[in-house]
Image 1 (tube, helix red, strand yellow):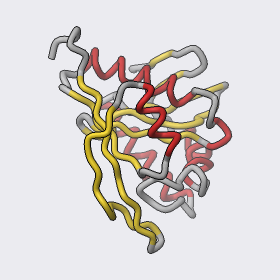
Image 2: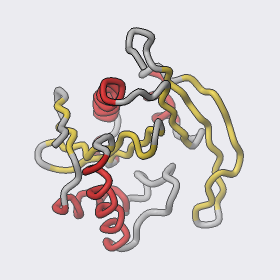
Image 3: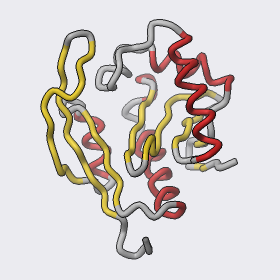
Length: 170
């Protein structure tokens, strides 16, 4: 099984025992403020997502659980070909953990795929996520208005891209 180790995290495939930790993330309004769905009100919604992650990881290990001290504190990686996404429980924000995790994911993706670039879409109000991606070398390449409607509130999206390093073959 694919597993990435950073200074403070283990990035691993999802397990059925991650349900409670993931529900703590997906039911948290702060964590979900810029996500493309409303906070999960019931564990069964999180369970469906977890089941899909478990099935997908077996075929394509590029979307990881971020584990710290035995708990799932976030998750992220390539949720579709070349598309990067991530989420972290607010208790772990502003500690550099998301940057650490996503840097490891990017290195893994460059060495295991031939993607010419990576892209990420995010809500322009999410200054922390935009700063993280900028630190990692992403540049803004697009904008689209009214891309998500959550609880009758529309949000926009900006798109950021990271080209494959020239030193790595396609």
